[in-house]
Length: 160
Image (tube, rainbow, N blue to C red; front, side, top):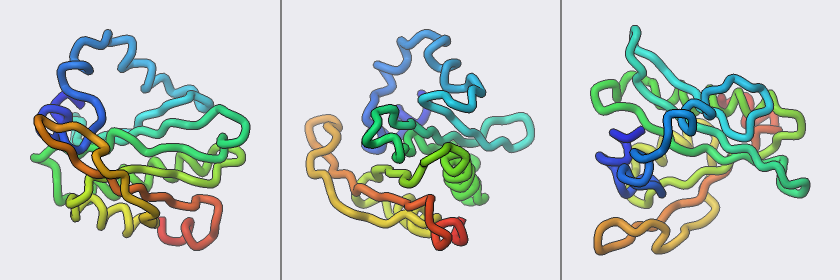
């Protein structure tokens, strides 16, 4: 993920510098394997090499616990155009569907990142708004497209 933050600062809300100082335990907690963890990370491998990752953060508050957020989606440059991005999104959606009462997975994608947005649409996500000035990058800002996928409908399940 440090590579992702460094190469694509406009795509993430964390910087490489702020994540680099986090203890290994912080990163490991996302890989715990606990079926009820508040956050999980799925990965895709090419042989023994981790090619990409995506995370899911589950809401715990009663009125919004039917929602999760897809975060940290990244496929290393050398592994792109092999279908790994789609595999990661589908794995994250499949994981969300295992949670009782889960209905919605949301995400944000940087406005102008057509490849990522097209992938999300192919996986069943629908745009519902734009957050202007969402992330400060250098001296400027980028906007984020808000997207959602209803993992509780048969139509969404058929596409995934």
